[in-house]
Image (cartoon, rainbow over all chains, first blue to last red; front, side, top):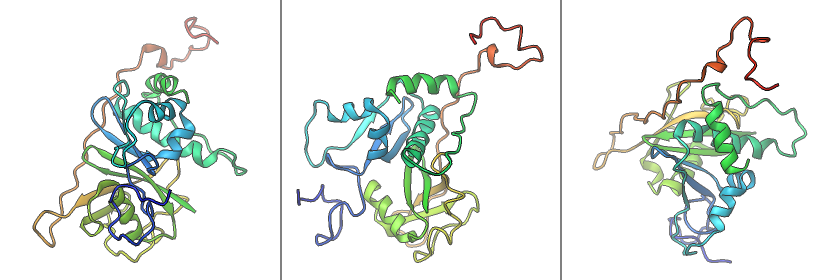
Length: 124
Length: 124
């Protein structure tokens, strides 16, 4: 569809989504909000390819207006866990189907148990 | 090479990736797309060097953000500040909210010398 996403782009002549924003069903970024109110903005494609739960949350019931902010409230996941989840999304997106050596994903021991619970919820 | 960054301000964290060869102004425009703050009111400071990224024509590699330093699972930390309203040269101070703290680990995680035979509760 040639129509641009909600007027975030300053120059009307430029192609839409050159600098991706947060609005509309085709936004480049998503906002994940932790239980303590921290907001994490990640690439939409990274999050939906890693987590079927997030993908379903986005395609669930809701209006499809151009100004729809793509925000997901994760009220069970605290920020110190969600930050690791976001790192994992980028790691998975980069190294899936990769031919180079895949480095180990570092996880701090203190976060490990809660991260396991979050990954079970997000199914990734 | 892709450069992965975590851009933080107060309670907001943006996980952004860009090419090493892209310029500071392009990165600021990506941030504008997400935050809706005009890109010339945006100031970025590299945490590892504490240097502000004030030269909009420099590339990310010039600012010390290369693919070898900024990995997907270990993104480079940048601080985001907005220009103070009504002023030309004053910027907000760096202000980043603390993340939540993990709960204390159960004793099972404490390594002891004889943890090989004396931990029946750990299923192997």
